[in-house]
Length: 111
Length: 115
Image (cartoon, rainbow over all chains, first blue to last red; front, side, top):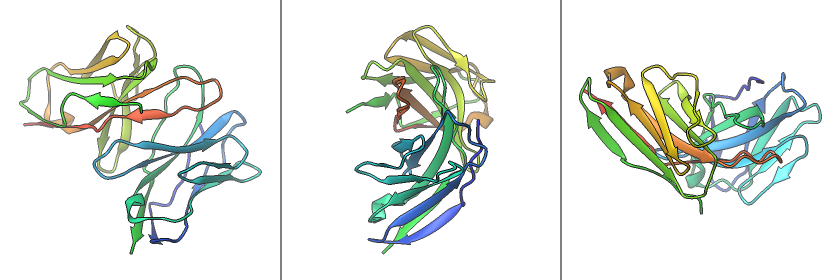
């Protein structure tokens, strides 16, 4: 499985876009990029995933570089409630497979 | 909405006690998982199950066992609790999708303290 590298922490002003980077230079062709977040005292929550195209949903956008060696999660208008640990996970999706969570990035949204 | 519930939010047990942590999901998911989360170590997978009566060891199965007698219920058992099992325990479930949507739904967690 590809290893991911994320910055340990980031700050963002409320109302601004939060851009969270993730490096996965050893990603293979059949591995997906997943993003989860964990708000304090809660279980992790799925945000978005992608293979090679950019993706957008009601929560965020995922930009994957053309070589797929890195990606960026974008929260377009961060709020205080977006303060959380954000996990970037790269995984082959096979039956019975499981997600492996690294240390993630602590995002602090400040007013 | 998918709901994953865990039997207790907080639990305090004594060393040597047998401890049962229960997890129930209501969306007919095939896959269920038990993680523990500790400061500085992130989430670590203990066991998972991809079908009734099936189980697979995760990364840190030592000192734990699991039971999946019904599809909706996945139990984590600490046969003889020890202080190093003090942790936050998180249960999750997911539906396998060939299109790659591997969304795991997590429960609220059980904070277990072993004294």
